[in-house]
Length: 130
Image: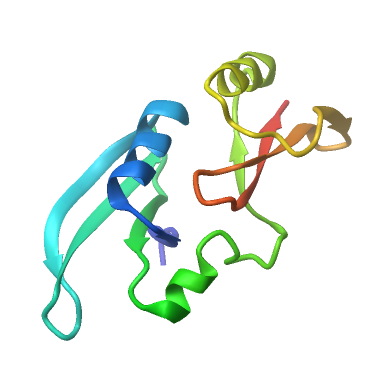
């Protein structure tokens, strides 16, 4: 095995999720192509990832009540993603200016600077810096 290729994130709407990840977090849109569900219904195969990263995120639109109920709660209220950045202060300021909700103020820990923010669906992320 060489690396973890994709992680799925269940979202309500492809375009809103793409807008958040590409225009706010500044990820790259790697793929956005038509696809089909296992039972033949149309869907899209949407992959985003941080520029230069190997691992991407598959933005998977919720399909049915069970999946819709899990949107924003895939990690049961815990931080589920950890985004490492080179310039913590500049990224924190840019995300704050873009309207991203931070649920904790920046703080210093043994492993670096950290602040928790919410993505477009309410999932918790750690913004991590040196």
